[in-house]
Each structure stands twice: as C-alpha cells, then as structure tokens.
Length: 365
View (tube, helix red, strand yellow):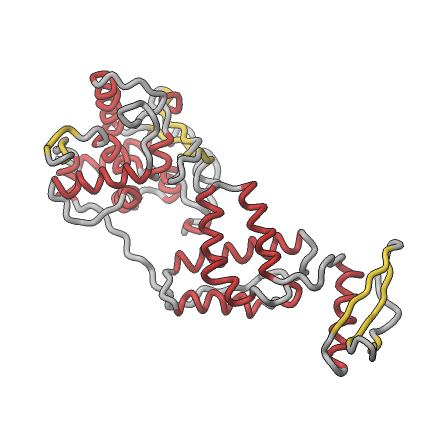
C-alpha cells in the first residue's frame, strides 16, 4: 500500500508530521530533524508501516534486545541464553543500544564484529557473535521492528584461530595404562578413568558422554540423543547433527565392559553409563577438575581439556573417509568442510568401527 500524502512541518511542536491509514487503522509518524531530511525520515517511517507493517518506529535497539532475551530465556537452554546475554552486554548494546532498531544498518552490525576482533577474540568467538546478531535481527523482523536482512557480515581474515591441544601417543598410552589419581592427598582409583578413555576412543563431547544412558547402547551400536550441559540441563545436543549413531570399536566395547564392572563392584546403581558415586550425572565442572587431577598426577603434560579429548579422537581418525568422520563426530554445518552429509550410512558403521580400531591398534601398546 502506498501513501498519497507527505509529511508537513508542525511549527507548534517543531517537527515533521504525517498521518497515514491502513485497514481502518490510523497512525502518525514524526521527525524532529529540520529541513528536507526530516521530511524524508517521517515519510520513510510511514512507508515502512504501510508496506511492511513496522509497528514501532521509535523502539531503541536496547529495548528490542531486552524483548529478544526474554524470548530466549523461555525457549533455549541457560547456557545458550547466558552466552548471548554476554555478547549483548559486552559488544552489541554499547555499539547500537541507543539507536532506533529500524535505523540500525548492516555496517553498524559489522562494526560490532570488527570491535570484537580488535578486542582479541578468536575466529570461533567472532562467528558466535555473528550468529547472535543474525538471530537477533531475525527476531526483530518477525516482530515487525525492522525490515533489515543481515546478509553479508564478515569475519576479519586475520582473526586468530585458537590452537587445539591433543594428547600425543605417549600420553594416550599413559591414559590406557594408569588407573589412579590423587584425591585428598592420597592415590586412589579414578572413578572416571573409563570416561576419559571412552572420549578418546569415540570423540564424544563432554556433555554427550555425561548424558549417555545404558538404554542408548543397543548391542554394539550407540545411539546418541541427548547431552547434559554445564548447567545440568538435558538438551538435544550441540547442533542438528549431534544426534547420531555409531558402532563400538573393540577397544570402546572393552572400556564399557570395564565401566559396568566398576559400577557393580562399587554398588553404584544408575541409568547413566558414567555417573558419579551416587549414581547421578556427573557435573561437567567436576568432570573437568577430576580430569585435570588425573592428568597432573600421571604426568600428562599437554594441557588438554575434556573437550580436547574429543579433538584428540578427531585428529587420530582424520584419515577416515569424509562421510564416516562426519557421522562419527557429529560436526555442525559450520564445521563441515566436506559439505552436507546427512544420510545414514547403515552397514558402513561396522566398517568405520573396524577402521578406527585399526588406527588405535597402532597407537595403544
């Protein structure tokens, strides 16, 4: 719908004013800018409402962000919305918070990423901020606050890539030959040693490992369908590819058999494969701290995190056929250097397991 009038200067209020009507609804739009620029601004506001149903041309980006965050808290995990809340408070709101959301430009959004780059953030973190911005602007379009489509936000080409630590072959052999850790100043069996080993043998994320239940293992096949995040929330996994299935290698099956034996001997009753001593899912922070103690006690010098146990697996099996590797580790599309590979490879799971076992046979003595 097109307007047939134009904004007029109101000398009493010292601003441009235009009345428009659509579907029996009448609205007034203003601009306090003097001259033709102000007239154009008032007309543009009216056009936005007439053509795109923009419902609040005076809404500031900070107010829109507050509405967006309220929705995130209702619809996403605590870990997700807390991360986005940090991005808004640290990087986004300081740049555009006082700008009317309909006036925010793609260049202003690009400058947020540029500022985060100048602040030393890694390429991965910059990508996360970009995803946050795009999600926010999609919310604003759906809410009729703006018509802006963010198409071309770029990550600076020199953005640093955080180096990933992985266990070397000697350290992998330590992991598979040493059972003890240090607790309260004394050496004792590490209740989670099989969890560390299973991560290296399968490439599970820490949350996937913590959320793994006995019912997820059917015969020789593992069906991954949940994760437990750092806040103790059960989620569907990190991304759309996180739900997957794979066949156990001989080494991984042996670790599971040993784990079930440990649970039985310690009279730990639980639905989870790698629970704490009470049978409850282990907290991710506790798991990280216990792994650090184990690593330090046994002389594993590379400062590998639990998540980097997954990177160790990926590094070891990277020579696998492209589709097999993606299906095993559940990469997101952003991480997928091989293109989208979504079909189930069925009987090839056994072949993939055999190839992985052959690779580990050459490493673990």
